Length: 130
Image 1: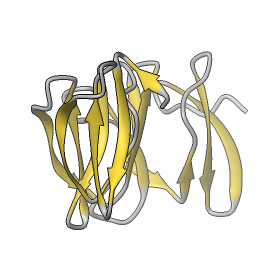
Image 2: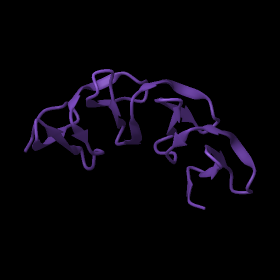
Image 3: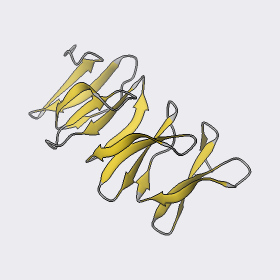
């Protein structure tokens, strides 16, 4: 098992949850999909919407996104109601409004995005740097 922040993502049948290092279920297998923990939060899907839980299994960001990815450098790529990608902060508010056709994670303060079939590089303020 691959552990992240003391927990490993596991799947049984069609449900995902998390176990601790002793193999005990720490967060029940209740999610339709999930990602491993990153920066204290794990993205998970219930029905068709994504939200985020903390390592105690408590929902921190209510499921509201069409798609969501793990946090990197304080921001996570997510799809808003308009079907476009943007970036949210750990409180679930848009740091960079959803406007992109694709969005990669931030690495060293920059992220690749796709806007109208053009690949761009943005900073954490959403400003195009390349």
